Image 1: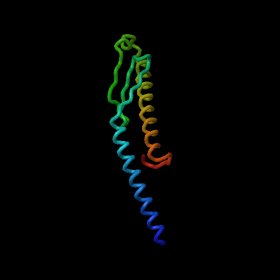
Image 2: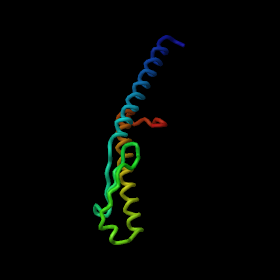
Image 3: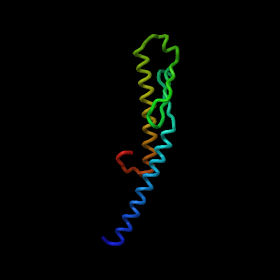
Image 4: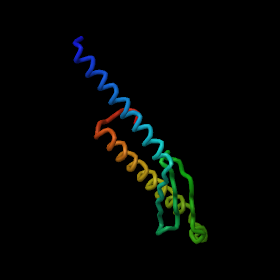
Length: 107
């Protein structure tokens, strides 16, 4: 192997390690953020974190008075899916800033 190629490979490995460290730091920061979504005109409010875990669920007591369990289930699902989608979109945008659009498996 030519000496110049070894230097180039070392530089490439250094850049890859730096990118990996930036991605790990960004993932840790994203995990602490929270994303909220509502459905039913605010009747159901769901909050998830960047680690894709639900951290809060608020249901307006008026919804319970209607006694429509299926509607309540739909409202919870809708709000949860919307909050998860927001968390995923924000995460993808942040990772894209670091990777420059490269698709890196596992991140």
